[in-house]
Image (cartoon, rainbow, N blue to C red; front, side, top):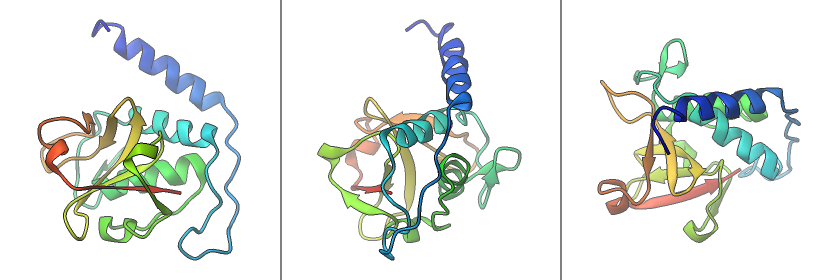
Length: 161
């Protein structure tokens, strides 16, 4: 796709998502899954909203577009603003959020957690083998590929609300 048209496509997707109704999640009785399962529409809404935050500066402890994001702050902001869920604040705690699912069942809106043992980094899967994340100090929220040179060598866990 021509680089000139990408911003236009992104704006159109964001406008469409902003006009859509967002049904709230309802509490569940399971402590490991505090909310009922996301609908496909909610999962897609999460992915579109995450894509709209690409380019926001990284800031350790950040959890707003105005102040910047770290990886778990980005996830918390997107989930709270799109579906009303309040995920845990740290990547280590995100490892127990929602339900584990397989890479073969990966879909938009799922969390991807990276790291051997305890996860050390996380992002939001947006489809097409790509995920949005806040990578590190000095960087910006960005879109990367799971099969990229660096990420394909990392252990990945998938979590679904």
